[in-house]
Length: 84
Image (cartoon, rainbow, N blue to C red):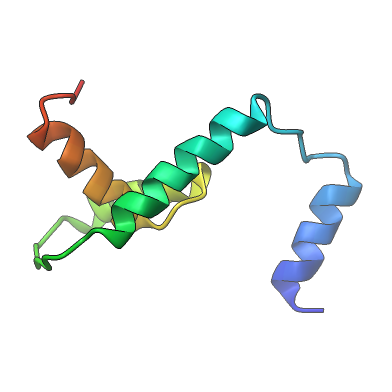
């Protein structure tokens, strides 16, 4: 087993894993994210502060999505007027 696999197994055995509430809603949410990812047709390059990127990567990890997808989602919400 790799170190990561051992960590996952240890975490599971310690009872740290929780069942997902509203599983159907969660599946629908991530399906929409996946569909939006597939429709990407333009590429951009930006410069971003290291700290900002690290924080975005942490948040993406918490959400269980790639950080590029999170950035794209943030930009989409802003562009469509749905940003907080």
